[in-house]
Length: 97
Image (tube, rainbow, N blue to C red; front, side, top):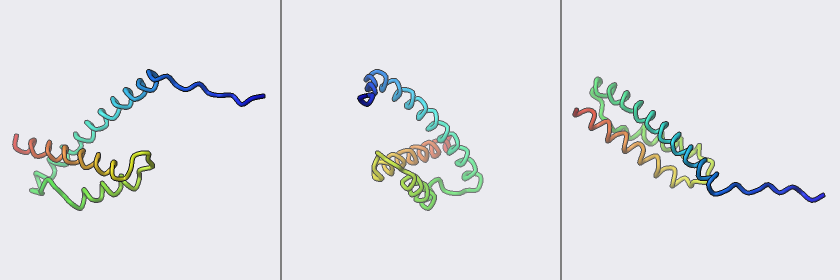
């Protein structure tokens, strides 16, 4: 008896899965940004700076270490640097409003 071959998923099926993941990523990113704004309010009350180099290095190190691929460590670092940068930008604009 020959081994069973699984049918390859269709392009549309894979794209639908990606679309669902994109929506979930967006939801999670917005949730993360909302929490960063809470932290921003705490920092503002305590008169702490928006940017904390040690915390950012810790976050980047943690996500790079947790990465199992297929994204490279460089790619993960780049993506998370953009997320952190945008959260800081939002925090700064929130402080002035």
